[in-house]
Length: 126
Picture 1 (cartoon, rainbow, N blue to C red):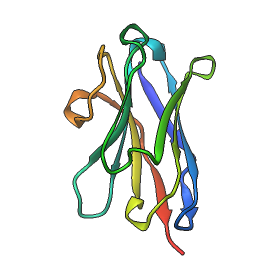
Picture 2 (picture 1 turned 180 degrees about the horizontal axis):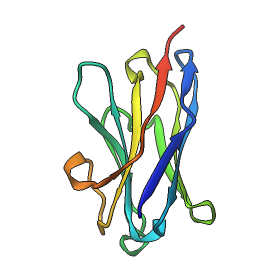
Picture 3 (picture 1 turned 90 degrees about the vertical axis):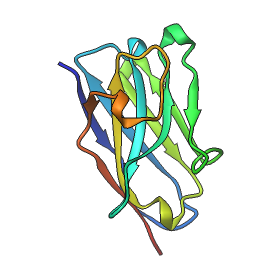
């Protein structure tokens, strides 16, 4: 059974950094595409970044809103995917989710992912 657990959220000042973790169990990360999404109050869930399977070269994809500030990475030994978030802005405040599915090439559409974590809150405020 695919299971995802996010951690690493919290309160950070504008311009600060956080690293989110998504620990996976029940499957091997290399064979699944993993994505990070977020949802702010009153807004739709937004795809931020994703990581394709090893077979697809582990390519990454970023939304325009986070490109250059966020970095997705994977530690196969820990079966964990990370989202390093730098230069955080108040508009980055949201609940952040990781998602996984058996996709060769990752995409940033939530309908493509069947397994989701419970989410972790990120608040950017002074």
